[in-house]
Image (cartoon, rainbow, N blue to C red; front, side):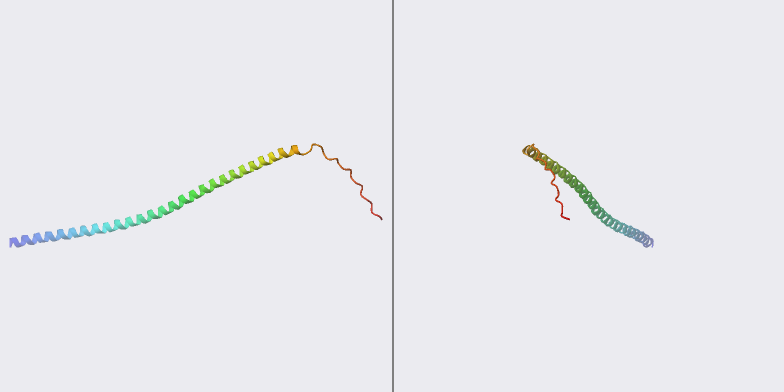
Length: 117
């Protein structure tokens, strides 16, 4: 009887230990699943932030490129204007000596013929 009682106690203890180990395992599995779900959610957020950041960077680059292009265009227009001014000045300088220095004789105003009444 003592051995049976001892074995029953041992069996009861092993049964309780097994139950406790199953409870711990279930808790660990639940915790693992929560961590996996949390990791998936973080990956989604990271992907969204990456896309948002990429769009933000692209937008800023486009604005910077547009501003740079605008400055280049303005500078190009200034250079073209300056070149045109230089060409006009050069042409004037070349043409002015070719014009005779004498002024044409001014004409006297012709009298307007009177109409018969």
